[in-house]
Length: 213
Image (cartoon, rainbow, N blue to C red):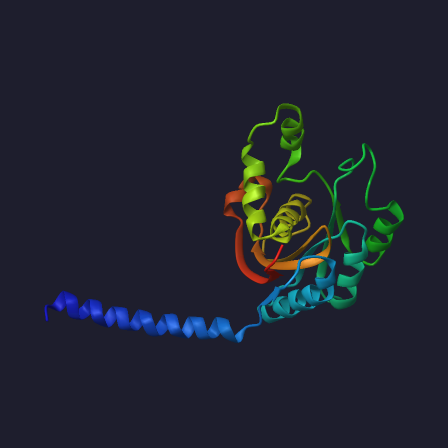
């Protein structure tokens, strides 16, 4: 056999066994795929997110929380983590109205939770343009692409950016928890980035997500 082919065969065999080892390593980890999306998965999602964060040595958690309920549940589970709760921006559903009540925001902050309410980077002004002019807009295409993995995936990526832009993240890997409408059903390990560096953001792992959504 020519030298080149023999070497190719050896290299391929080495790759094959490495690949098998990596697959085995992944199988040993616990990844959850929920049969349905939504609030019913909140407790399992938060527990899985915390367990994976501990295993990876991650101490920064970002959680989407519209009413504050998911953030308080996260506090009960993630007491030794730096927790950032990201709420809907003001005026999303009604002009000059905040979905997260001020008293709830204060209670979370008193318990050491960073609270973010800011423009959503994966819609922003483009939402207004789409309403007025229709058409297709790049940022909304990115958002809709992420939604192919479920609403929670898009939310988890978006809140990671929002927390970074608010100055609450160190730049190290985080676990971001999002959901479908209410509660939590998706957790991702993310290498975060600010809006300006969006294409350097990395989704490292999917801890859990719904398979039907």
